[in-house]
Amino acid sequence: MIKPKALKKGQKIAVVSLSWGGLGDKDLIHKYDIARERLENEFGLNVVAMPHALKGSEFIYRHPELRAKDLMDAFRDETVNGIICAIGGDDSVRILPYIDYEVIKNNPKIFMGYSDTTVSHFMMQKAGLVSYYGPAIMSEFGEYVKMFDYTKEAVEHILFRDTTGYEIKSARFWSNDFVEWKEENINYLKQLQKEKHGYEVLNGSGKISGKLIGGCIDVFPMITGTEIWPELSQWNDKILLLETSEDKPSPQQILYIMRNLGAQGILQAIRGILVGKPQDEMYYEEYKEIFRKIIKEFDCCHLGVLYNVNIGHAAPTGVLPLGIDYEIDLDGKTIRLKESGVQIS
Image 1 (cartoon, rainbow, N blue to C red):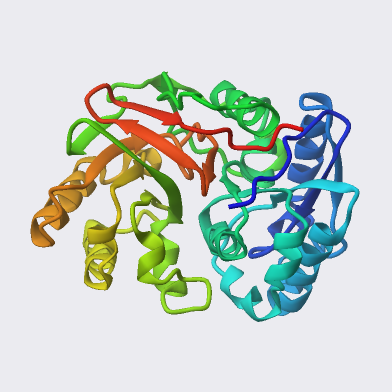
Image 2: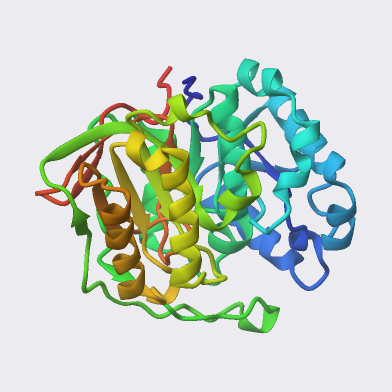
């Protein structure tokens, strides 16, 4: 896998809307303004929105080909050093016919987002590019008042520095505070509560290692069988990242998707699973039982499963590079990067 170069202050970040186009809607454009100012003032980056990124949700929905054009043009642009997705959604899959994987491969750069951006992360996987499952413009960089410290520190460490041996720690605090995206709420600071669980081991012991692959499990049914879904051999010895969306899929839905992964032979091929904290801790205990059930159903006692990782729809969320080697210590309940997530020039 090709690693993009680490970000440096003064470099340019391109914003793309690859799924839902709400970033450009009149009542939500203030989220872009907050994110742009934060990226510039707190991270020292220059921000540019690609030509169609702020066209609004209706335009973006009608033009998947232009969403893809923005992405391809951002990769082609030698002045752009990183690409951050506006938000997730449910429609990234419609840009697949317009993707040129050679353009991605030949112009490696930081690409980050989560949720429906899982589709695009599998595009990066197909192109052979390390990508970053992490915060988006509207939700985290556009957070009212301030970003969560945990999220900000993750961005600073993983995208800007050599992270060989870096430990991905559990957040000490979390939030289930819902704040509607309205300008009248712009001064509302989300409340935090102490983390009671930390990482939990659902199966296995000792240490496991492997390259990370995956994303939002809700998206898997849309991309299974498409050109970006890896062949079975490509899952060998990987660590699978799974997290759930704000739709809060029922435990039964998770069971069905996991059974599909078992039926494909994927669960038998991988070495372990990292499971994200469910948003608002909805179905927290029920999901745990589903994973334990699946391990028994498919006789996957070899799998190391670490639960309650701060990633994706968890608040706060972190950054996990996809496509690099991790070491999961199940006895010590630690996650460590065995190599740097970025290329240090």
